[in-house]
Image (cartoon, rainbow, N blue to C red; front, side, top):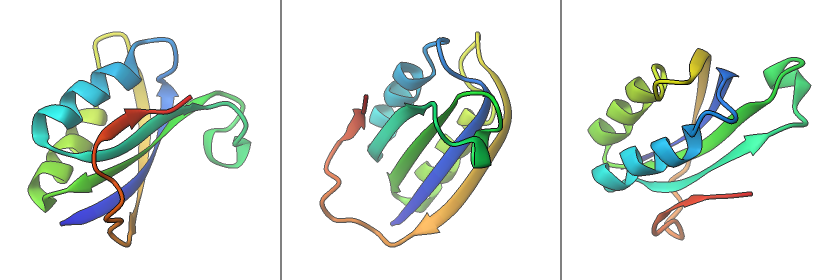
Length: 98
């Protein structure tokens, strides 16, 4: 079991990235959350980005990270930054945050 905090950089807002990622996470039994970010220029530069937390079986989390490097058809992922965090037992589902 592992927990990864990711920052997805590129054309990832307004392209159904969050809902697509939720489908991918739910299908793999991954818990966590995803949200658009508009105010973190130190990470995303002048553009918007997406931030997420994925927690679940190691292999399934790794699969999801590989999928988000590509993203849904309308997305243009430029980079994915990932940080390992301590497992959080309070995460019991995957949510899209506002």
